Image 1: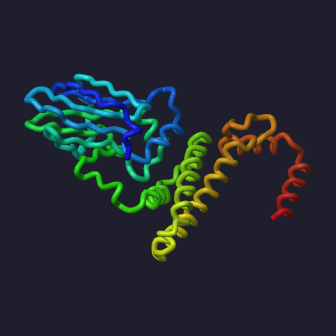
Image 2: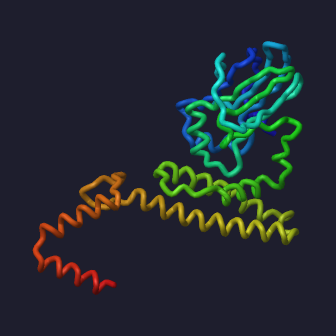
Length: 269
């Protein structure tokens, strides 16, 4: 199913204690990465495992590049590793409910995967909060229900970022529109209409996504509004700065003007 998304297989030889670093090409935006995150973006199969080295066959998404270093990166405590032998492999997935912007940031800085040899090869993601290594025989993502429902659930359960930039909000809006479009097409299929439970879940998820879209749209509008015609649209003014400006105006104006402004505020309330 994902054959067209990955490059032709290549073989890489690693020594014990090496680190695989996966990078996102600089010319690729987060919007381009968004289209690739519906499935796995990398596949690795061990060809040969020796006491001090191993050979691994890998395929990556064309947006990505792979580099190998001889030094390992320090991992966080209680980080789990995936043990693989010759003929076994794993796929690289983004975590469910993780923002594509965060995934893109980590790929740009480099996703590090440590490799240790101890009879078998152990693979450990240095920062496993946003990415997952899934063994080939345990890759059941396609069988956890329809893809449209899985994506909609993960998007609804995603943590809200209140200080997101305009570009990040626009990226989330694009992702939400794609998911809603797929969900709407899925809900209109004849097979779904025959099952009341599935059809009801589609309606609930669509309503939740609609409310999230309203909030994101409002946040986007606020991020591009101009608080003052003298300032640029993307100029950020904190409440403290605005409060100090108002206090300066109050001190410089006459008591009569201050009383008139206070009366206008009371009339509006």
